[in-house]
Amino acid sequence: MALGQFLSQRFGYGVHALAYIAKKPQGKLSTLPEVAAWMRTVWPEASETYLSNVVQRLARGGLLRSHRGVTGGYSLARGADEISLRDVVELLEGVELDRCSLSLEGACHTAGRCTIQGKLRLLEEGYLRSMESLTISKLADDIIVDENDENLKKARRGREYPPGQIPPSEVPRPTTPVESVK
Image 1: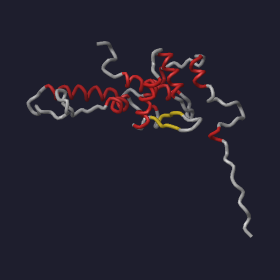
Image 2: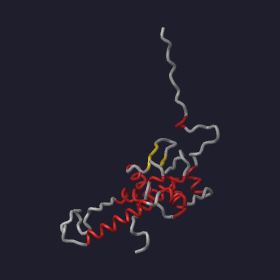
Image 3: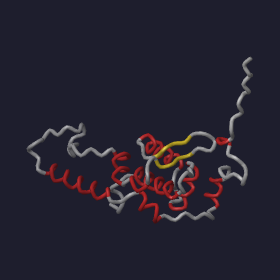
Image 4: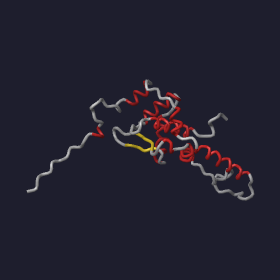
């Protein structure tokens, strides 16, 4: 087994997406094509379709916030220093410490007779505790975003507005004149 195979590909996608989004300045949103383009600079085979599924789970689970509209995208739902790897693994992997490792149903049929399950649970709890100390903020500090990457530039096109031009979502809506009351 290769290093890194204890956690799923889903977890890897999620951690990378969160770290990239955390790298953005406060108030700047990231689109799915942009995150996918950056991920392909790290891993050329990254799938935007699979990333979409993972990002939706992160949003439904409360780690990402989805912003709709033409200028929409994703942002972190809380500070990057408040999201630990344990938060991500519990959301994406569905960690169940009480689940029996021998049973497909989850109920332990050997309760009280199995000495191994208790030791395995202690290992799992220790592993999860160790994941609490590593935050998305720490991971984001270490990633490299090549601002000159053509695919990343292409994914961002249409999201940048020339000076003085207001994004459509920020254009004031016309108000109907109120007739004066006599």
